[in-house]
Amino acid sequence: MSASTDNSSRSLFFPALGSLYAALNTASETILRAVAGIFLTIHGSQKITDPFGAAEMVEGLGFYPGAFWSLLLACTEFFGGILIAIGLLTRPAAFAGMFVLLVTVWFHWVTMGQGYSGAEKSLLWAAILFFFVIRGGNRQSIDARIGRAF
Image 1: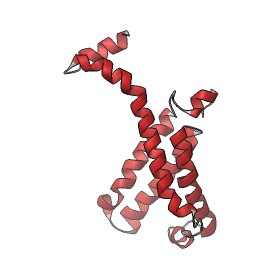
Image 2: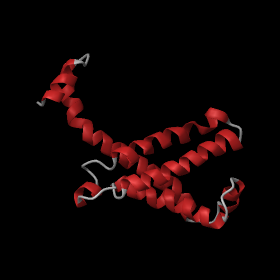
Image 3: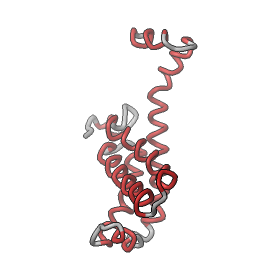
Image 4: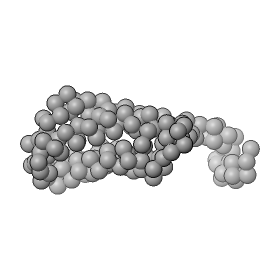
């Protein structure tokens, strides 16, 4: 066991769990990345079947031309979710998804006037994607396998 594991185990209420936590550290991060990517892909699958269907909505938010931004939204959610799930170009895909989610925070909180309760899920998902913007895909990602990452 490394010194850092020993030091962190000493501060645990149940130090015996330290080795379990250390063993599951990478796996839990990989599971979170895969789940976030899969869920984003599922959410985007509705948009990718009609990539211009949100044109009027995005123009209502001030994004012109709506057809361009609607297509970009659909691709960001669907293909970006796939990239996040497999860990390829993780940081840029997570950044793009996070940007989309922050726009939905604005939409629900300000435009729709729903406040925190309307924006809560988008805030949570934006925070999860921010984690992967900073951390990248981890060692169980295609980024790591090819030895290149942003």
